[in-house]
Image: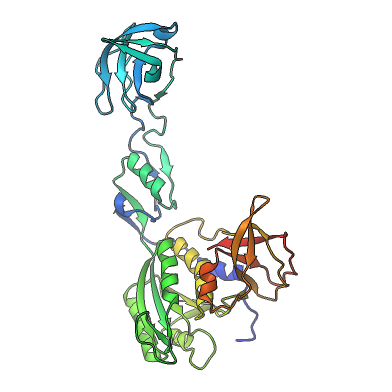
Length: 406
């Protein structure tokens, strides 16, 4: 097995996404609970916005013909305010005091803004003419009832929520959140704040991977830390199944050492192995499979490897399960190298880097000198990953490259 060709990154991602052929079931949630969720159906407007011709300015509703020659003196016959329309009709030589957002009275065809008018004891004097339609928002300017404005697969951020509210939807059909169970493995791990023995380290991977999964739309289930014993691992795997996890993410223990028991434990619990080991740095020992309906994603134990693999594989998987049609889209962008890079070997490389400025409209990026996959300090300082293809030749400062923002 160890001598088999390493799977290319693009092929690995395709296989991971193929394990989510259909989005998860639909549920209805209140608008207040819909942030970050993915629409499961197209959503059409239930009303027209604005529902009536509305004033865009404070001033006077008038007929354009009455103020074509200025100064023009008009009789003020009423007031139209937001939520309180003027119920009459405007006649020749008349004006209605109006405020922003208020309905335009019947008979009026323009708004004389208050800066161009003077009020005089029940009259208003226009000092500037206005063309018909000026400062009036026609009914349906934004949208009309029946317009499909939010499509299936759209992720709901603040603007989408405001639009849905304006469309008169108090609740929305969304895809159920994917349930992602996280299991850290290894006798060497303790939780932050616990007493660590002389041969132990603090578990950190769970927190970053959980944050990325939640940001992608997942509900995270923390299974804790399993020791290097089959009984511990199998108990936690069963706990993930009992929790009806859609994805079980293991952290560490998937390599080939005597204490790396995760793959065997998963197999003993019925895992069908999809692939193991990919042509990528960091993250070579990535594993993918499934136990029944539960997808398995085995991330490496080194912190940077686990986090980068989480960004590249777990986040798209979560988005695919949530119904995002763009889950597998290329998230890289063009950048310019700020320093030389050596030739790359047979694995696609994701180099931690920072943005030092802009050049020719593209970010200027420079890789950190230390790229060790255990160094969280460097990852926390990085703003992006420089992507280098397998067998890429040496690259010079000023040449273009691909990068992915963190």
